[in-house]
Every structure is written in C-alpha cells, then in structure tokens.
Amino acid sequence: MIERAHPLPLVRQSQILELSRSSLYYESVAVSSRDLELMRLIDEIHMKHPFMGSRSIRDQLQDKGHPVGRQHVSTLMKKMGIAALYKKPNLSRPNLQHKVYPYLLRGVEITRANHVWAADITYIPMARGFCYLVAIMDWASRKVLAWRLSNTLDASFCVETLKEALGKYGRPEIFNTDQGSQFTSDAFIEVLEDHGISISMDGKGRWMDNVFIERLWWSVKYQDVYLKGYSSIAEARNGLREYFEFYNGQRRHQSLDRRTPDNVYWSTLPQMRVAA
Image 1 (cartoon, rainbow, N blue to C red):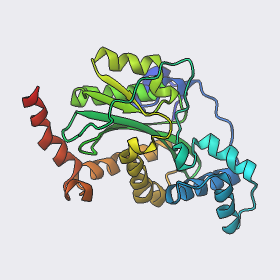
Image 2 (image 1 turned 180 degrees about the vertical axis):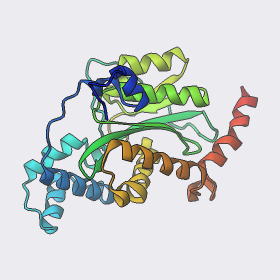
Image 3 (image 1 turned 135 degrees about the vertical axis):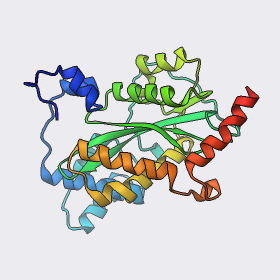
C-alpha cells in the first residue's frame, strides 16, 4: 500500500490510508502459511471456547488433523495476544513503568450515552497474514464510535482512534480499558486527561468488565471476518466499515430491547445533556 518511491510524503500516504506512522518503519517478519492457518484455527477455537488454554487448543487442532505441539500453540497464542478467559484475552500487555488507574465502575448503573466508553484490541486473521483491530464503544448503547486497523501493536493507532471518537461524539464521563501498554501509554492518557475524562482500568480477573466488547469481537468475526477471508488490510478496512455501519444502524440487539445501537445512543444522549 505504501509506495516509498512516490512523490507524496510517506506521512501523508499513511494519513490517507489511515495507517499508524509507526507502520512506515515496520519490517514484517514472514509467517509461514502453516502458522497462518494454525493461527486462524486457534482464533476460531478461542472465539467458540474462550476458556480453553494451550493444551486444550492443541488437542482441538490435533483432532482437526493438524499435528502440533503445545509449546508451538503457546507461542502462536502469545503472538496473537490470546489467553484463556480466566486470564482475559489480552492483546495489550501491561508496561510496568506505566501508571495504572483504579477501577471506577463497581456498582455504577450505566444507562445513558457518553457516560462510559470502553476500548479493546483483537486479532484479525486474513487470507495472507493478519492485523489488529481496536474499537471504542459506548457502553450503554453498544455503539461502535471509532475503530482502526494496524499491522503492529503500538499505541499510536489507539490514540488516533480515541481522537476520532472524541471529535465525532464529544467526551464520555468515564473511559474504561484493561491495563495494556497501549491504554496506559503517556500519549493515550494525555488525551483523556486533556479532555477531563475520568480513567478507569480493569484489574486482574475482571475480564467481565469489557464483556460487551468481547461480544462485539465474536459478532465481527463470525458475521464478517471468518465469512469473507480478507486478503489485505485495505480490503479488511472496507469490509469492516460496511459491517460497523450495519452493526450500529441496522442490527437489532436483544439486550437493547431489539433496538439498534444508533437508536439507543441518540435517544439517551439528551438525558445526559439535561442532567448536565
């Protein structure tokens, strides 16, 4: 996608393609076709049985005719950022030098738009390779406010997504994430603090706190990614853009009384403004 010989500056090319700047200097290491297939299968198994660890996933792969050892499965899972549910599927690994913020949502009733936003990252398999998807969701309405794809797990694509959501929808009262290095990075925290947003972070064992985004990942993969088998980030970006428009504006959610996220978001937003 990026053409280094093109007269257009590389930074401008990355802006047009909605790629993080760090991807300009990233040199990918080739992943074998066998490992790509194993990673695709691991992702599918994990989405169906998120409680399974490397031993159980190894057994599942062997049952499907893929002779592979537990250590190799564990290595691929670490590369994908996947862990058994009791440890929370976590692509954003903690940085011990970053500040961790307290959890603010215990006992809080979340019923209006822009009260609480949440963010998370997931692995996206493609026909030839893989990438990572970050999404920011309004907790009360399940509306996906902004999202981005990246071929690296640096913080910049999360920061860009956050800025986009704030520019389109204003600011939430509370922003909740896990303790991953992307979300505890100085750049990400600075944006939240500059907007006067209270920062909440899940503690260990609190995987249920982002359960709505975990359900979003299941929907994205089984209703779009696995069905289409995208061959490139550009193709995935176009397809996911269509899916999120459908998810927000047309897909009725049973947990929302058969309403769409768009409907719930815009219908509860005035309540927040009046209360303010």
